[in-house]
Amino acid sequence: MTKIQIVRPHQEHDIGGKVRALRKARNLTLEELAKKLEVTASYLSRLERNHNLPSLPLLERLAGVFDVDIGTFFERTIAEAKPKRVLHPDEQMEIIAYQGRLVIKYFAHILYPRPSLEVMENLLKKGGRVVFPTRAGECCMIVIEGEINVEVGQERYTLDEGDSIYYTTDQFRRITNSGRKDARYISILYPPAYIK
Image (tube, rainbow, N blue to C red; front, side, top):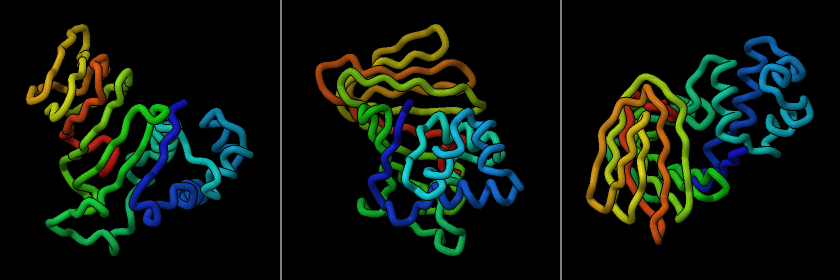
């Protein structure tokens, strides 16, 4: 499973507390929710107490069960998330996923409480691979360092530093770094997939 690690700003995210609140708001027991998610009630209890961090696929299943966006688990309250124009490096939310092979920095999540675009800087380590679920939307990617292979449906593209690609997200997508060094690229998604 893909474990995530929230690097910063960690004090703003209480994923377990949000899961507990959503579960209670829907009158689900730990056992009922665990069954829907195909995990044990014990694991879910530890998750709700922030002793376990969920995998990205589990966060996606949680979002589906609760009918919320996955970003719900990362956002602050609306009162705290007042719109602002400038985002400093220490305010960027950074997530490490795919066994440390992917580092994602989110840029727009605190500029506006409900951004219409999702802007991320991704660091895909050498040998790393990421597969994305299909959904309605659009994506533009710009490679700023290294080389990545992008598969969209049945087509495959090799992108080098400075190259960009645009595609719709309603088909299979995989990004692989088979180059000799880590690769960095910017992703711009509409509508937001994770932070909304």
